[in-house]
Image (cartoon, rainbow, N blue to C red; front, top):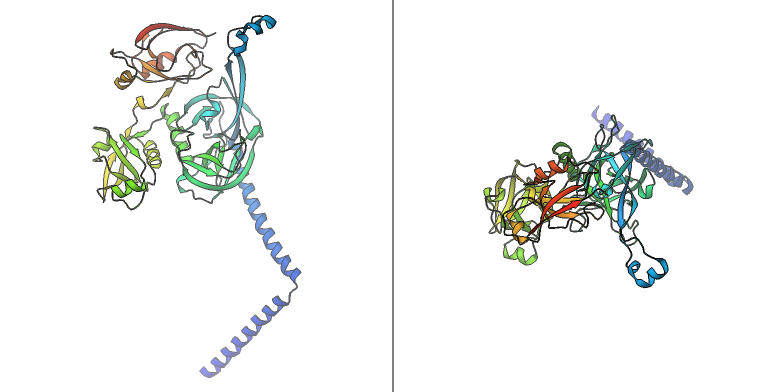
Length: 480
């Protein structure tokens, strides 16, 4: 019985081998054209499926990307030869006052919430008198600035509408180099343009575009007008806000930059929920490691952030960190560069306790630090106002600033740190001026300044008491 079964098995195996050999022979005897047809059909099917998948992603996300057009009035300075006697002899007296003209700008935005909050770049709407938002279905709305942050180039605007299409947020920390991405925006005003590429690099910093840089680099075509648009992955999730291009011609060169979604979302939610950007603070000064420094501090490589100063009684000091420590991990994430460490601290919630891994004297240690809030005096504040102080940025007056300005008197107020060229206060106020009173109301801090300024009417002139160069003086700014 066993022998018969074995013989039967051998016969079955023999038949199986013959069948396989016959199949192989048939395949080998097939004509080259038949083989080519099979390969062509396989490739065509694969490309069709890929194209269909990309089309589905695009249809899913396009409705949440908007066109943003802005306009603002700027002053054109009189040409120098207008004062030339020879010129006046033939053309007469020319107007001496600066001439005003309208400047328009185009950009993109992403609908962040169904009730009308839109995320875009600060440089898209900065200084704008009017903002017009055009949806994918061509509906148009007037946009209002909710808040903006030049340090990340993020701004939030609002339109009066509900039940708007939105996009799913992706986790930009999980991005990998080589992933396929789509850039969606309105380059050169061409609405709803889609370009495709890959993630070329991650964590780009030191470019000089913003204070907090952690850019996603992509070769998806990004051109003027794409700013503020969405960078999405193949799942249709937003993983970045398109913000800048590297170009010698002004057009696409294969190098574009996007703000990571996690950073953009943190800034946006802070603006919406708290009316300002709240950043984490550790109270440290950091620098990059070099080969020489790594050798001096007994390190294996140049990765990490070297602490060169610790603020007394600051969060780092209270957490036991010391000058000369090298931070290698923050909240469970590896630290390769000081910029990466700085961005992680900034996006941490004040009050959060984080685990920090360091190397001290060649030994690996771990400590806990309770994150503080970046002090207001270290965050330049731009009041979002529509009156004669529009475009004037101020910050808290501190003893350190008084010392830098060479003022020995103990005074209160806020310091002007920037003035937009098209601001009604341009040419009247100057950087470094200390605003002590507005319309005879004393200013002691940023909160009082913003409270008073927010109540000034759009066409109302004001009286200021300022300190400039150690001397007090009154100034007036008119609405005309």
